Amino acid sequence: MSEPSPILKICLFCGSRPGKRAIFGETARALGGALAKAGFGLVYGAGDLGLMGETARAAKAAGGHVTGFIPRHLLEMEVGNPGIDALIVTETMHERKKLMFGNSDAVVALPGGPGTLDELIEVLTWRQIGLHTRPVVLVSPEGYWNPFLALIDHLVEEAFVHPSFRSFMRVVETPDEAVSILQEALQD
Image 1 (cartoon, rainbow, N blue to C red):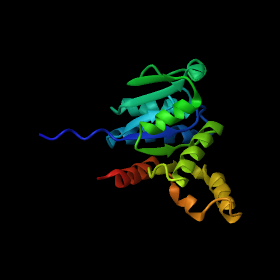
Image 2 (image 1 turned 60 degrees about the vertical axis):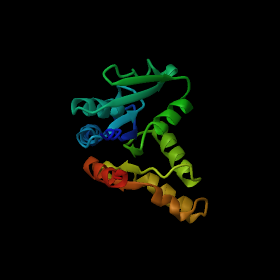
Image 3 (image 1 turned 90 degrees about the horizontal axis):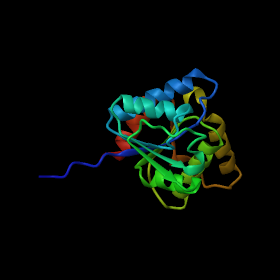
């Protein structure tokens, strides 16, 4: 009798705020549901606010497994989500990022602010220096990530990063496209 395949987990980076456009929340909810329906577990920053909370609640509502990591000092500020399957409290932000990434098979980034950028740049840098080859997908509703991509192109043009850096991430507009890429990339 063979062992059941372990659930593949997707690390989510996104805002702890909702942003100003309704499409951001709609995209977060659609992503949470789509990941769960595709059989992926969600690993995220454990907050119950903003896009983080929207995605996690939608994943749980669709029957998904959700694990959250939150630093002790943010537990009250970001309001740790009591409705998830596992809530792990870390001592530092760095430990949170390390554990989120270490407990996942791929990364998806939704719109977010400085924390999201920090997390995203770190995993892309880890890829650049050969620490992983995991898929990284940016979901860019209404072109949200276009200014970030323009910055990456500028870094390439100025020879501060190898042109291959841009290939470390896939950019899509919808959660369904993100899930399709993840399914293709993570198949045995």
